[in-house]
Amino acid sequence: MNKKTAPLKRSILIDHHELKQAIALIRLGARLPMLQAETDLPYDRLLKLYKELVGTSPSKGQLPSSIDWFLVWPNNIHASFFYGIYICLIKENHINGIDALLRAYKLYCEEISLNGPGPILSVTRSWYLVKFVSNRMLSTDRCAICQGFFISSTLYISDKYICGFCAAKVRRKKNSIYGKFH
Amino acid sequence: MNLEECFTAEISEANLSYLILAQRIIKHDRILGILQLGISTAVADLIEQLTPYQMFRIAASNFLICRFHFENEKIWQLLLEEATKSPDNKSGKAFLHSKILISTQRQETILSKS
Image (cartoon, chains in turn red, brown):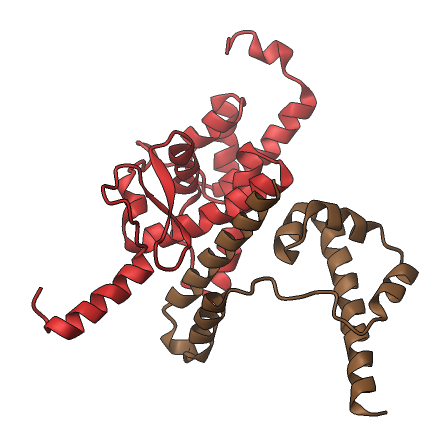
């Protein structure tokens, strides 16, 4: 987009909407690069907004963007859970983009703090997750044992995917047969 | 009042409170309501428009109008596993597993519709 002409065309309503989105994102812990990517608001305004809401300057440096992070044990479960909510929201209500992400993330946090161990996934990570899946760097796979959908790597070699829960059970059984030696 | 009449009365009472709750949730936040209640958008539209009298008439029935969100045996086993643990010893594993299976089931019903 041509940045020089953007301020002239800017609609007040869209501006207001984007500001609201940015506020919601900052409250959930989003960092500046993500805000810049998702809204058309100028950088200095976002910076001011961030400082006003959080009280400190935003942390600098790259966003955590590793694909492998989503495949390790507790993270994978949280990512799969979040993605399940996100997909349901999108498919049923025909909402998309950052709105769906915000809603899904809020729901994820509520659910996980209600009964479970508390959220592991940050907004930034969940945002990356959605991007990775839509760009086919990650995919969802069905567990052969419990039939649940889980986030998995597209480079997975075996055609039979087994999720972390079920794999743990299988391992436990094996250990009980063969003793502690692997 | 014998036991069967008692059950009928309680069922219609449960129906009415379910309908009222469902309508309140949908009116407050439609998108969230559809996910939480596990209903389709078309049904959500209808429930939203019900008048109190209509709700009362619909609720007066021998059958429950709502049913379990999931009927997968595995999900129930997991939920039970989590519920029987003492509150200090919660790992949340079974809880998370059940949640993933629930959302999987939901995705399947959405896919089968479309």
